[in-house]
Image 1: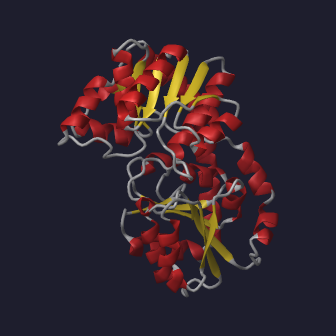
Image 2: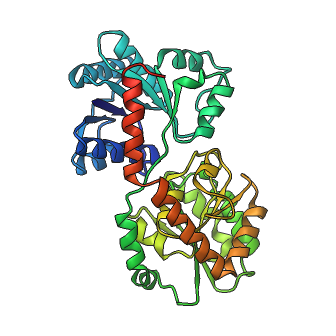
Image 3: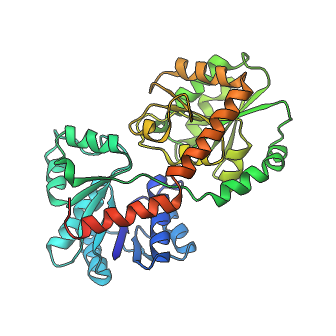
Length: 365
């Protein structure tokens, strides 16, 4: 099978979809498939894909019509069976490329709900021109079908996956990582990892920290990641008197997650957030907002704790309860790791990806 992955992302801190594309592409190549990436020249995710040994086209530039033509040219060169496009603009360009001489069935990859609006004619048009949608949770598939982007058989849920080895190493080096962070043995480390954007719910996390600050003894908070909104976010945390430490973009995220005592996922809208699965792979107790699909990754009360979206008070109460209960944190962490091992490894994801992409390639729904 031949697969072309397309993303127009050019932010300095690329997101989970680009990471999934690289993981899926590398894994499928290792299984004998032919995969390539298409992105903007010099985009950080494109550089990262090339560093992983993936074949990359940096041909997405120029006026809009030129980008359509370049997308078609790459499709003609690669002859994909399936084009997996992140975002509706990329999906339209691929669909028009196919309609004007290229080959490949076009699948629109959804990382969120609300990416298509039934009130917008261009979104309805985009959905008609694409062959399939790929979501990262069954709940997201239901959301799109219920909002006019059906039939349900056109939507394929493809859960994400995690490579366990880096997290095993992170667990093994937990003490050394905590020492490097300046954490004392009796200090509680609470944190998150995400692209630095308000969309990620960081303001709600900061509000929750304000509520619990001073209530839970020796606690320190860490935020891993970077992005265009980082200066504004750091400014918003100044009243916390250095309680929150911003670590920036890091290459040692598995080790940092393993060094935490509690991971918090405050997202507003993301579906089955990748860093939630990664924190679970690191054996951490997780407090997550109940975004679409969160309950497919986390069994509430068993392998993590779910709280309402946009409710800093509920988030704060969950953090405070787990902060003083080391035994429960450990139990949740063990259950979280077992959940990933049973359902969300990279092998599981690649098995599912092969099945979904094969169905799309032959027009199956």
